[in-house]
Length: 277
Image 1 (cartoon, rainbow, N blue to C red):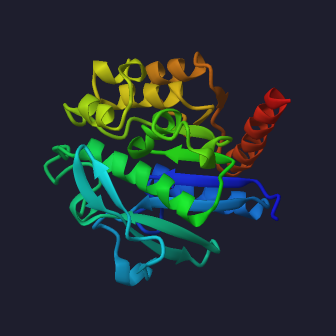
Image 2 (image 1 turned 30 degrees about the vertical axis):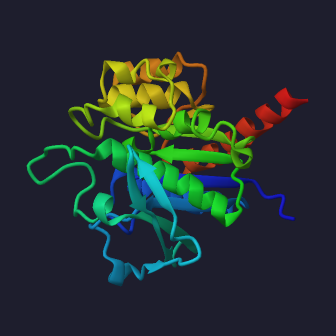
């Protein structure tokens, strides 16, 4: 049995499947460097309509597809696809659903208007990833989240999946970037979370609104660690992260930061092991 530490990356975008951005480039490079350091990795992202399936040679993983998930009382089929990044010697899994991810955009339309179902899309992506990882029989030591679409994962791990033995010892880390959307997501975010059994006591920030800052504060509150991935993070977000209970890894430039992240995973895992003794 492998004793390698296992890191699950869940990101709203990964290059080269989407154009290079601060998030997409960092996730690809970080996952590659972490794998080269001797850890096992898995990488998940949504299969947006922007992803060219033919050029990137995506194909469906039949044994993982076929589940249905109920999101806010509506049944949705879950399709899993996979593709490789040959230059990085790693695979990326894609969460797909015709209704949520066919459109050729990530967060809003060409006029800048946010999609009205962004929270549902986020919850589908989060739950779809965690259910698929269970189906793989692969238990992550750490889940590392990137981007607003993953911001509710720490909350879901502490509520919806709190009694799931598969994730009983899994730690979760949230990455903080610059503000990457303006405005607010769904007005009915509380109803969507309540449908999944999330109690109001977990929604303190969300009750104030579903903007980037409140989603980020929610992610920080329920994470074991926070990684700062930019030197241009808004001061209010930065202050909140630095004053939280989560361990924080500060930002440094590129290669050194990736190495520091790998060490940070070890520290988070070892801290939990020491507390358990």
